[in-house]
Image (cartoon, rainbow, N blue to C red; front, side, top):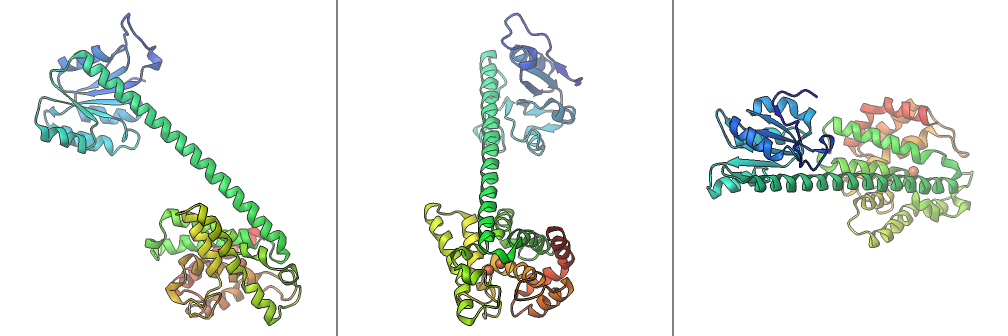
Length: 368
Ligand SMILES: [Fe+2]
Ligand SMILES: [Fe+2]
């Protein structure tokens, strides 16, 4: 790597780290004398890159990937606070500690340095030991922080993977019991994903659909019928149309599902995924005009995840063949859903469905 600037490449005899292990540190200081002094102080423990101005330094930061900055506050034509702001705006170095060098002893400057993102500052008359130790401390802390963030990321990823696997196992179990709706659970996940993307693209319900809710809603979709495990086989797998009483019993899958999730929520309080799953299991058969079940909720009293799931659920049922009914074409299904907008379905979600119905057809063909 060839970087313009003053780089210390000659470790002294009492060097404590090999050059490849010396973390890179960037100095931005217009004083040649201070650059030489600081480089000399740090060069045994760090690979030092010194620049006279922010303008010279910034283009090289991505390549250097410093572990600490030493920035002179008072440089001709450049403001130290602006330099902090510019460094913080670069994602690759945004979290790297910045130590400010200033001749000011004013407490306001001190608090401004700290509140603007600097981690520490030293006066112009610093001792070599102080500056070396401060840089060492901040580089070490930054290392711990990066390590911790990596571990949290890794662990979070593992937990999400495990949750996804459990979701899959559970939705497979539901489908094992309900032999008539093969693949329904997985298909509804992709339809829900598609519908939410369309809503967000249209700027609809964006305030209720932040990324975490979107993720939870899509992940919850394959389990919307989880309560069917509580329905007797004779009803669940009956090849003929259900009688009125049987249909009444079937409707209870919404309550069984929500109750099971509620049980889990008692041990995992404030779990947003479970809350979305409970609402979806409970409300995906409610109708916009209040004629659905189990509660006959109407309009926006129906949770949004239930209003969204209602369309994929009906669409998939319509285009799927059952022993008691033939499948209908995509076009016919779109027609039936369009007629239900404003009565069965939320008008906003219905509008989004019309805008992305071709994607529904692609999903159904891909997953059939
Ligand atoms: Fe259902
Ligand atoms: Fe369903």
